[in-house]
Image 1 (tube, helix red, strand yellow):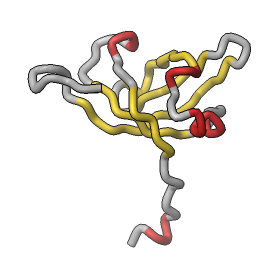
Image 2: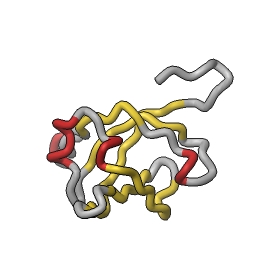
Image 3: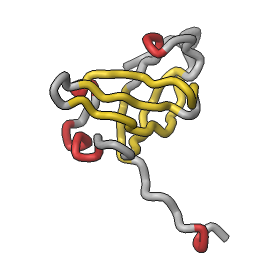
Image 4: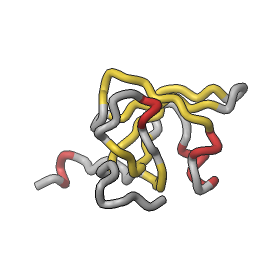
Length: 94
C-alpha cells in the first residue's frame, strides 16, 4: 500500500488481541500507540499473511503498520502485519 508524501504518516506499532469472535470471523484489537482505551474491530481476513492467524488469540500481540493520526477506529489503515517479538526479560535489559 503506497501513500503520497502528503498522505497520513504510517508507523509500525504494537497491537494486542483482546477478543476473537470465531463465529463472525472478527478480531477485536487495542492499539496502545493510537488509543489505549479504544477497541478496534477488523475481520480475520485482514490479517495477512495467513501464517499469523495462529497468533490471533486473546492476549496475543502482533505488529502492524498504520496511521496513528486517525480520529476514529474506522479511519485506521492497518496493514503489513508481522509477528511481535517475545518480551525481553528484565534481567536482559541491562
